[in-house]
Length: 262
Ligand code: NAD
Image (cartoon, rainbow, N blue to C red; front, side, top):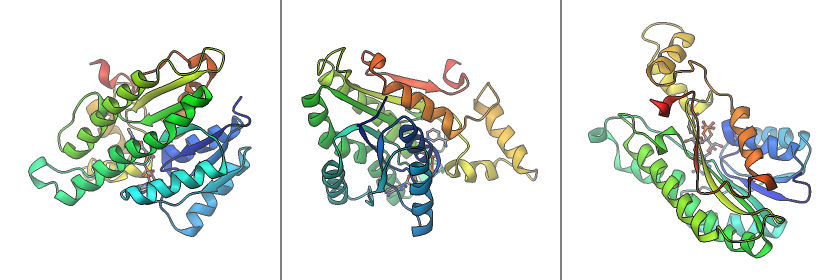
């Protein structure tokens, strides 16, 4: 159902973003991928997205740099009409607030929050003019509740939830039920098994195995005691792109094994 549509997924050389790029491609979209990595990692990511169905190209931009974001957005919009924007790039640094390096604060806010402001600013007016657009921001349960040792991350994720609600309001009346409208939402995952959380798994091993580390993380916060897989999150993003989701906007949707139900 995304035939003829173009999507950009930031942070799609790894983890959740890569699974989203693959799923959008399987649904028919041509997918612009973005993210860091060696040439080999980027080629492998591109090959897997193309194998899922659609065309794909990598648009390199370090998302800490607004000028690089602007250049990426111009290049993507030359390549295709940008209909679906998924802001997924993100980093984490766990440490007590008093010990968070100022540089980590700046990088986390830049990548997890400010980059989405810049991409949305470039993408939303065109979506509104065409009557269809989907912005899906990959926030986190940490956009809904806090945990210790994650001050910059939690601040960035609460920030992107707020930013998304403002954009949803401003674009709520764009388009029509038939065209699909313009929606802006956050997906708020609990634990998802990706490289991002590997340091936290290792920190919870307490001398045991990696599985012990995974179990300890889950027991602390996620009542389902199951990790999500990147493709679980991707399936929700694809569904949000459907026409029937035209009135689901301004939401922050948890997929967290009841973490935030407590
Ligand atoms: P990941 O480390 O596997 O992927 C992160 C992606 O962001 C990579 O493609 C990386 O290259 C890219 N990236 C990092 N810095 C960048 C920069 N300066 N410029 C451009 N790209 C950059 O992590 P993931 O777990 O797939 O995380 C994806 C998103 O999901 C993040 O926003 C994260 O906060 C969020 N999230 C993850 C979990 C989890 O448990 N894994 C839970 C909730 C939310």
